[in-house]
Image 1 (cartoon, rainbow, N blue to C red):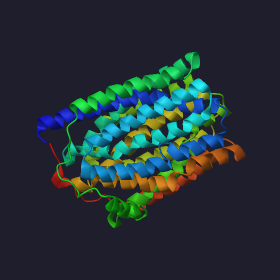
Image 2: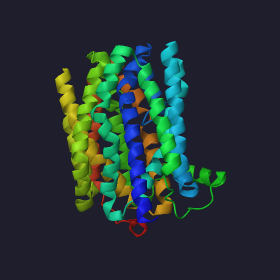
Image 3: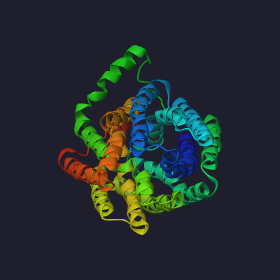
Length: 405
């Protein structure tokens, strides 16, 4: 790719991230209260999250397939396929809202899981549109573009839902994803310059079998990421739903919490990206987990909206120190024609370990109350912090030679 194409690609990816952040930050704020409003118990909400939520089983599998295929077919087709999944999911959520029947959420959740087939290709596009030494900043720009709409959109979405219902939120997602479809089709340049072989069903089956066996050089990293996913999944996957049901927080209040988190995240993301490029990924990941321990401890002793809002604002700093560090560490340790598969393999491994956690969290909540899943998460995050400190090493960049820019 030429420098002009690289610059263009980063702008296109950032634009896609901004529009997606605008749609998803509203959707994520109201989604769990909406599902509960249809009469579903917390355990059923957990089951839906385990199937097609961010850490669900279906997203784990499709991310691996999407990553593996993107190393052979290209990145752009899977960006488009993810948008089609998002359009379909929003349509089924609208049907559920119109009919009041939660069963329409089942195909909606399936398509929501398919959305994440684009994530490995998207993460690879970011890495391949920046030099190796600048990938922490490149990921930070991408994440910042996604998070900036979260400064105002969640509170606005919560207010709209409280006053006019959920259908306007889901309809807006349809519109924004339609715009994204046009932007990617018209302006995005393919970044895969060297294919990693022919895409055949037999080879895909062989690769799927290897999901449960992380690469030896990254085994400690994979297990730490999977344990982290498991720990946060128990107490975090249903957090907004638990706040809504236990303490009666409205969708507007939940939106305010998301907005506060996004403000902190947006302020710190770019400086932290520079810090990661200078000092490495591991120190940032350790700091992120320590912040998580403090947040979860605070949640155990909180009962009011201001307290939960303050702690959720701190969550923005946790995310800013975690995501670019995790993605840069992995991207810098694999070559270009293996990057999509590596991104998808990690997501699949995390998903296979962590997909039951929303359902387990729902069961803990129904039996023991609000603090039970939070305490389980706290214990898990403490363990993960120790694993990162002891077992993860900053790998030598295997992808240094393929950097662009």
